[in-house]
Image (cartoon, rainbow, N blue to C red; front, side, top):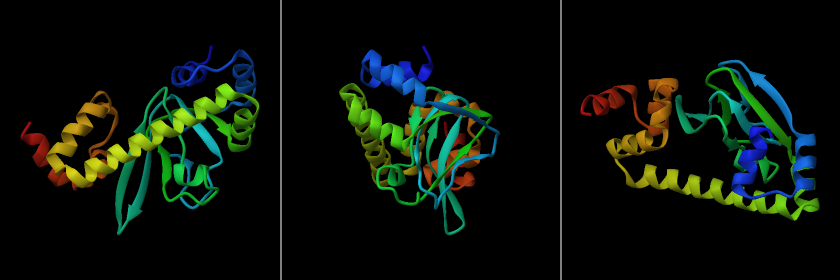
Length: 187
């Protein structure tokens, strides 16, 4: 069984029929390090799943790059603002290393939801996870100082530290690399 099916079923169990149809819709592509998986300003028409590698959501504001989230193996992602509203995305997704992505097109996603209650349950639970994560990250930015945000980053992404650059770590925390170096030296 492919990893995407295992991860989908860990969120919400799919019927055998839904699993079979779902697998027929999946397309896989490998992206080189530094290659955009999805671009800001374009409508996101895919649900993505990281088979191998590492990716980040990011955007630029006033010349600074901000990282919204990292996605490692066995994680789903979408450009949320775009996928569900058919609007241009406000951020991009980049492969941080050679990354193999499986994807499900939006029209197939909708058809699977319509045809299979079990897939619709997966979609609802997936959206709940996305919403919870977004709110948790926003609360961290609003309520935590840089040192506490770094501690939260280590708790969530510490196992990826060797794969994430200091610049991306600083961009995720919303601080400069100099400030990050100061925080790290206190540890």
